Length: 196
Image (cartoon, rainbow, N blue to C red; front, side):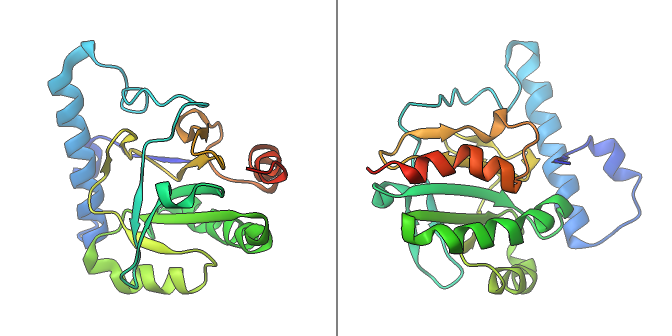
């Protein structure tokens, strides 16, 4: 099940003083302030960004743990899955091995997965440990706000970009949002079967 951020009041009742818990509480608080400040005139955060499948996907750049920058605009001709996760997200940690195995099997067909971690820099050792087991590059996301994709408020969430650079699957609309073997085959399989 996807992990949705809860209210700052709920976070305050927790006694977990860890940096992860503090970061989650801060993200929740920021979301509550943004929603309260915007009032009822704004759409929910997942819809506010107007992502449209079939339209050009907004650009993303992954700054990898080993210092490279991978831009989706440089991956035209490949199918790209941009996945957002965190070490403290249990559904994410369950999904990552499946996604990694799928990425490794289908890389020869032109599949590229980019892993954006919402962990903070102080959790870099944990992120590196997880990343070492994955077949795709991982980097830390500097902010939960991603231009044109909105605030990453639910984890895991992924977006699929086709070979022509169009958004093929909007993760905000996915129900359930986690990847399964069946969902990968249904969503990504046909894109891999098509040439550019």
